[in-house]
Image (tube, rainbow, N blue to C red; front, side, top):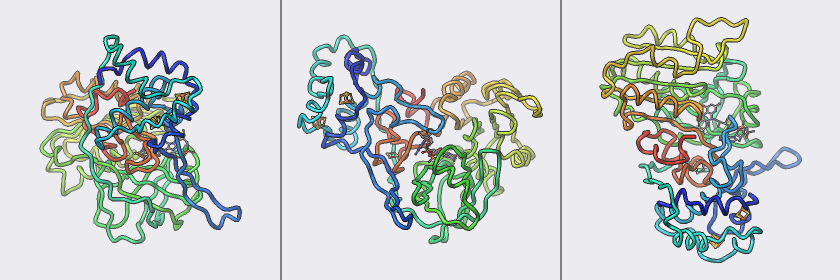
Length: 418
Ligand SMILES: Cc1cc2nc3c(=O)[nH]c(=O)nc-3n(C[C@H](O)[C@H](O)[C@H](O)COP(=O)(O)OP(=O)(O)OC[C@H]3O[C@@H](n4cnc5c(N)ncnc54)[C@H](O)[C@@H]3O)c2cc1C
Ligand code: SF4
Ligand code: SF4
Ligand code: FES
C-alpha cells in the first residue's frame, strides 16, 4: 500500500503502448463494455457484453470529456492495484493465477505482475507516497441486467440542451427510491445511460429525469415523444442519508446539472411533511450562463419557504442576456451567506468533477467537518451494479457504494477528486 508513488510505475508505464493486450488475454480480468447490436432489418437484436480494458484511455471518460485516470502511469498502476489490492480486499483472493499470458502478450515486456511486485519490494525505500484505502459501506444492488418496461408520460423542454421526462413504470404500482439514486435508461438498439432521479420519492410509480443531450442515447431520448416506451433498470446506487440530516442546517452546493439529483433531495426536504425536521437551508447554485439555469420557477417558489436562502451565479453573462445574480464561479457565493453553526451543518455538493476541490476548500474554511460533507460523484458507468469495472475510483464502485459518498470516506483515494 505504501508504494503508490514508487518510481517503478513511471519507469515502466512510459513504455506502455496502451494496447490493452495484458487485460484481454488475462483469465482473471473481467471488465467489460455493453453494446447493442441490431439486425440489418432493425427488427431484432441483442445487448451484448464485450471485453474492455482499464489500460485504454477512454475507459473512464465521461460526457464532459473528463478522464479519471488521466496518464499512462495512472492506468498502468491501476491494473496492478486491482489485481493485488482492490480485489483481494473485496473477495479475499489475488486476481492473478500466474499463467504468464500477459507476459507473452505485452510487446514492451512490462506487464509481468511478479516482476512488478518483486522489483518494488527490492526497491521499497524509493517509495514516496501511501495509498490509504478502506472500502466504504456498500449496498446490495437489487436490480438485474434486465430493463423493465416504462413509458414517457410527459416531456418538458427546460433549456436548449436539457429536457425533463416524466416516466411511468408499467409493471409496478410504486417506484421506491432515495433522493440521490439513479436509474439506467435503456433504449433498445442504442444502449443504456445512467441518469439521476430528479423528483422526490412519491407514493406512485412515476418519477422525473432531466437529461442533457450529449451523445447517442441522450440524443435519441431527446427525439422521443410522450407515449414512447423505454426500459428502466433501478433504482441503483446509494442515495443521500436524509435521517442524518434531520435537526441540522443544510448547505447545498450545485454546479450545472448537479442541481438535477439535488432537486430530488431539496424537494423532499421542503415538502410539507418534512420541512420541520430540518434547520435552515442554504442553496448555492452556479450555471454557465443565464440560459443554462434550470428550474428557475421552482427556485423562486423555494425562496418563499421559511428559512430558505438561495444564491445563484453564472460563470458569464453574454451580451443580450440579462442577469441580476452574481457573475463568477459558484465559490464566489460563499461570502454571501452566513453559516452560524458549522458544527451543526451538513453540506451536500453535486457538480462537475472540477468543482469539488474548490467547493470543499470553502466548506473547510467555514468550519464544516469532513464527515458532514456529502458528495455525489459522476463516473463512466455501464452495468450500474458493480460488475463491469468502469466506474471504479481506486477500487470503489461508484455505481454501488455511491454515487453519494461521505467526503471523509473517500477523500484519501487519489482518484476521487481530480
Ligand atoms: C450516476 C450518474 C448520474 C447521471 N445523471 C445524469 C442526469 O441526471 N442527467 C444527465 O443528463 N446526465 C446524467 N449523467 C451523465 C449521463 O449518464 C451521460 O451523459 C450519458 O451516459 C451519455 O450517454 P450517451 O449515449 O448520450 O453518450 P455517448 O454517445 O455514449 O457518449 C458521449 C459522451 O458521454 C460519455 N459517456 C458515455 N457513456 C457514459 C456513461 N455510461 N457514463 C458516463 N459518461 C458516459 C462518453 O465518454 C462520451 O464522452 C449521469 C451519470 C452518472 C454516472
Ligand atoms: S499472469 Fe496474472 S495478470 Fe498475467 S494474464 Fe495471467 S492471471 Fe492475468
Ligand atoms: S500489454 Fe503491455 S503495452 Fe499493452 S497495455 Fe498492457 S502493459 Fe501496456
Ligand atoms: S458501472 Fe459497472 S461496476 Fe460500476
